Amino acid sequence: MRTTAACRFILCLTVLAQTARAGLGGLERITVSGSDYVRLGEWCESEGLALKWNRKEGAIEVSGAPGRMELTVDSRKAEVGGATVMLSMPVVNRGGAALVSLGDLKTTLEPILFPRKSGGRVKTICLDPGHGGRDTGAEAGTNYEKKYTLLLARETAELLREEGLKVVWTREGDEAVELSERPLRAARQGADLFVSLHYDSAEKETRGVEVFCLTPAGARSSNGGGGRSEQAAETGNGQDERNALLAYELQRSIIRGLPVEDRGMKRARFEVLREARMPAALVEGGFLSNPADARNIYDSAFRKRMARAIVDGILAYKRAVEKPE
Ligand SMILES: [Zn+2]
Image 1: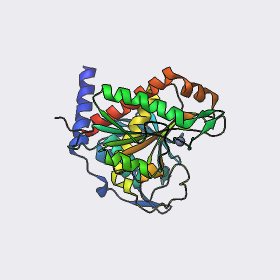
Image 2: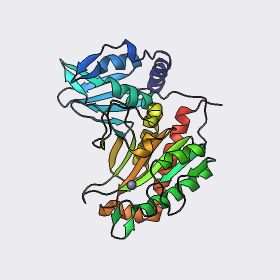
Image 3: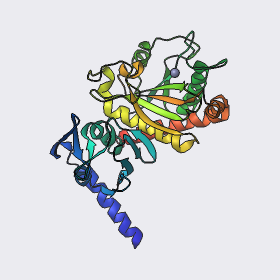
Image 4: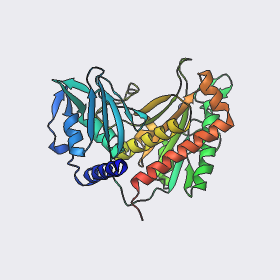
């Protein structure tokens, strides 16, 4: 009985989510530090989602048909379906109401929670192994990032082909390719997705995996911005919704599949993402500068698992966006 009632409840929420999505237009805008916000409670109601707010701790739980999400007052860090997602603006408390930025709803949370289906197929994946040739990327002693991004791409390609997908490359060997040239190569080869593979380097303690997609125009990057204008729209911003979904599905799949620290789905204005005409994401698969991460990066069995998680993320994205035939 309980199960039936629960099923009916979920079914009811699903129907609500599919038929009664009021859109953001009907929600009252509230300006906070120059940015448009809306009341989280009103948005949840319009989307048929349940909201629970532990006011003492500032923890907010949103649940419903698309899954479960946790937000925290005064924080940009959200957890969606078990994976960390970094918002552009913090959730705030104004006059006893939790507010969330309209930009984050539009370009991050809604594209992830309610992906729009489209007629096209996801068939051709462009893999972009970071660096190459004289550009070694991050270094740890004589271990170069360029070598491990290529090894990871080769593993990923094999698994993608097993899934019936076509793989194209920005580089297949130890070759230097300009950043601006990489998304162009993807477009020339008819890629439906662009997935760039990297490893990182920082201070010794920093570890974990993060997946970036292009920062929407007007929004703040997670990485300081790299000197690019916040307001200008880049070529890649034509795919904002899909970029967010792809980066999220990759981050979630990697976090689920591997014992790595979840640094979150993030935003940056990296050149390969700015110039991509197709949905694009950039995986930072760990830190060569951290001994535990480095051990995993050099380990071929671990690399295979990372490749599997990347492929599963791509497949989750594909399922989310393709209309059934
Ligand atoms: Zn790199």
